[in-house]
Length: 36
Length: 283
Image (cartoon, rainbow over all chains, first blue to last red; front, side, top):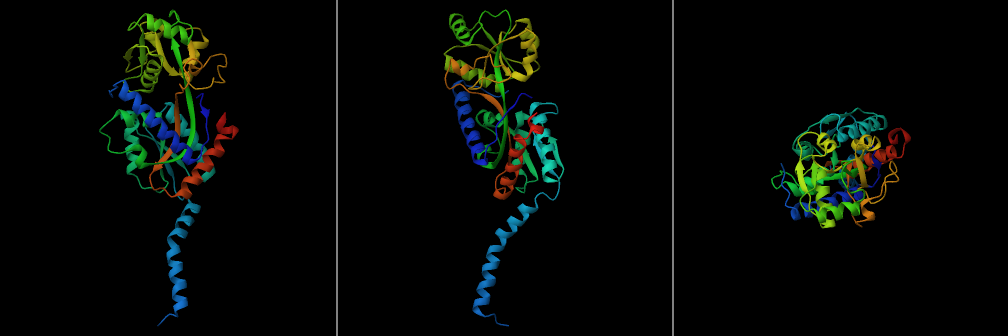
């Protein structure tokens, strides 16, 4: 699969999810991306 | 019968502690029946294979069958909603992916809030992407790609797996940070035939699905999208070496309905992390 494994605590994984959600929401807004 | 006051207080304290003891006892006994991992993508997809590998590992560690239940649809939203609606008892888990984070900003009509309604359990790993170009494309490096795009605005076609897909979003962030514009060309099926033929020139695609073409010289990789270089292609630079802060990849993890008892979350996290450190799952 070529995955880079990244063990985390639940809190760290929660932070990743939160940061990614925020990051992509900005990109989607800025680029005006719509779902298919 | 009248209870002595001291005896009554003792019993009352014991009764108050009972729910916590019961939760601990049930977490220690967990699981007593098969566990399901819902994957929002079809059999054979990276999400499905990841869920099966982790499921197999958990089956051995937990002593219960862990079944992967594929619920493809709406870019993972069908499976996610099913998990959000499930009992928070540890018997229904979600193979969470980057798509969940993307969908939260992409869809304004979801019946759930991913951040609010899901409990993070464990991270698994991430798949690096690469900027891959057709061999006849003039740019051989990321700076050359940026310079070429600036000199030829609107003339580079960037393929993706659909509007709002990871390759589209990853490309959009790159364009934003580089200050360039490429024409987005969404595909419902595979974009590889058109990329190989040069009808589209650029794609942000998972390294595992493009490495065969790259190694055969049929496609050229300009950079990997993770902040650091990928050990599988150590000579390939990272985008961040040119655009500091650019760090994107497709991640996977396990999530559960909110309010899953902390003891169960910690047990699953411990077992999954043990697997990530074990050669059997790491291979």
